[in-house]
Length: 73
Image (cartoon, rainbow, N blue to C red; front, side):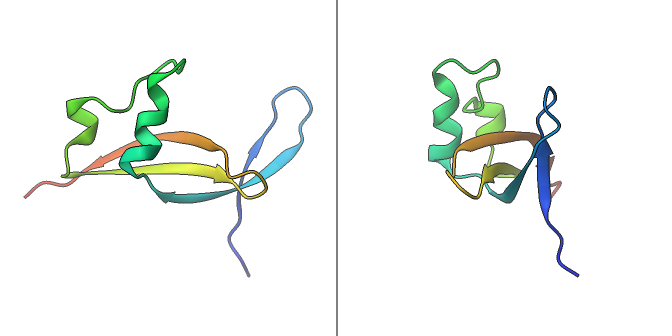
């Protein structure tokens, strides 16, 4: 059995496979231009928080997953 994440287009119901990866600083900087939420704030960039992105397999376009996991020391 293989775990495969996907997103579903709300109007067509078509599924697109995605890969979940740890976000890089470059991934987060993409949100500066035209995104509803900017993901390169001091809070989000805190190294104690884990950040993830979802990327499509075919075009490797970026879709940020609204998940930031904090680690308490």
